[in-house]
Length: 116
Image (cartoon, rainbow, N blue to C red; front, side, top):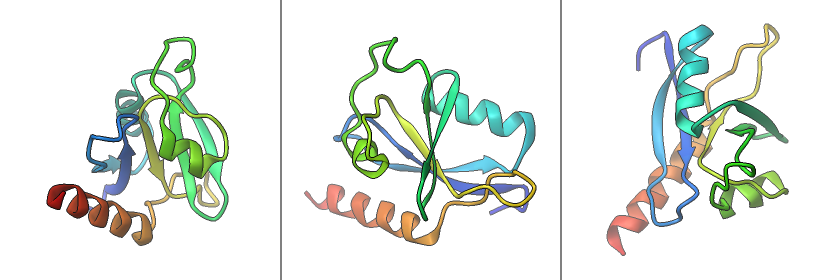
């Protein structure tokens, strides 16, 4: 992984789709565009206690995006559309990388889906 990127996790609303680990720019315009592209529009962040940030399309309900069951469970609120999970914010307000536990969970889930 390059120093100027960090891993993030895309959780699609469609449970039949694989979770995807992406390389996200560490800051600035490229990071914002990557997050917006991943969720399909303007961003809203939901803080996941002790887990990180969940990024979603702030107009997802208005656009009629599909319900995202797993994201809704971890956010403890209804979530629609594909989401991106990152780490929390550091003291400078920059997003931190997603935790290794999330990455391992994504790898295990993909392996189970491939073996099903």
